Amino acid sequence: MSTAPRRTAVGPRAARLLPVLPVLLAAALALPVGCAAPGELRDHGAVAPATPSPASVPLWPGAATAPSPTPLEPAASRSPEAPPQPVPDLTVVGQDVTAVDVRTLLTKDPGVTQDERRVLEPCPGCELRAPEYRDLTGDGRPELLLAVGLADAVVLHVYTAAGDRLLPIHRVSLLTGFGAKTVGTDLWLYEPTTASSRTGRLYRWDGVRLALADQKVEGIGPTSEPEPTPSAAEKPTVEKPPGTGPTAVTGGGPAKPVAPSRPSGAPPSAGAGSDPAVGKQPQPTPARPAPPTATPTAAPLPETKP
Image 1: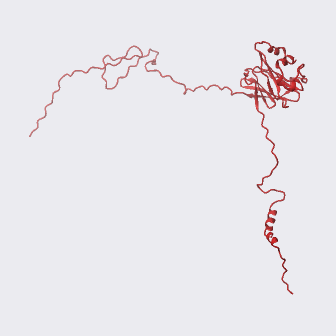
Image 2: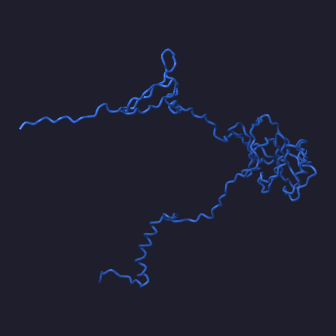
Image 3: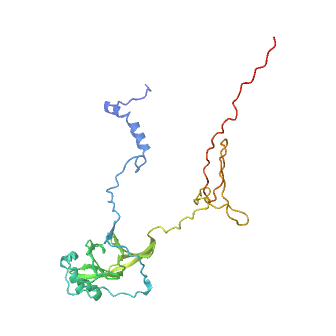
């Protein structure tokens, strides 16, 4: 009886798969379950679009800057204001504040004083600025900003559309040269505090009106520095020509003129001396050569002995 091991026949298809199985098993064991391979990219869905920061837009950029400060009203001294009421007998068609006639508005708004209404007539020193339109409530519709200039102040009015009515949401008196801008839905108003600083107030919509939200003082230019004083070494010195200033003499006597020096090798001149006038020296006169006194004769040579 034979004890040789029994062999099982393997088909040709199974024979082709046998070398591949160890490779697949090793790859499956190398990768953790539920984790991506290192460096693999994943899709986390659509990215939310980036919202740009609101830009700063000036109001009435051509207006001049006021040179004098205005006193600040303490927040504790302000009494609670009643909710704003719509302007009577004024309808806003389609909630479009750009269609509102500003002259009619100034006539019918009870919050506009008689002094402000003087701009509707010939008034020296009065000014009715062109209206500005900015979204300050965040509803996507612009508000109406109206500046009424008087002789010594400017009154700023802000209106919004509430249905078909016009609602005043802000009123403030400012200097004639105030600065103003909007940053998104924020309203900034600037007034100078000193010669080198200004006070800025931030007004923000609180659901009822534009309320004061922040206040800050900021510099508007470098302070002036005193000019440096030049040192003694840097001070310019003025040189005086010779002979123009007095010479110090002991005892306080009169100054003596200084005689000019005679150049070496030059013959003395007749009448050389000092001029009595101070600062004036006579010019030397060249001397004529003296005539020879005798004719030179040749000296005899000594005799030589042979």
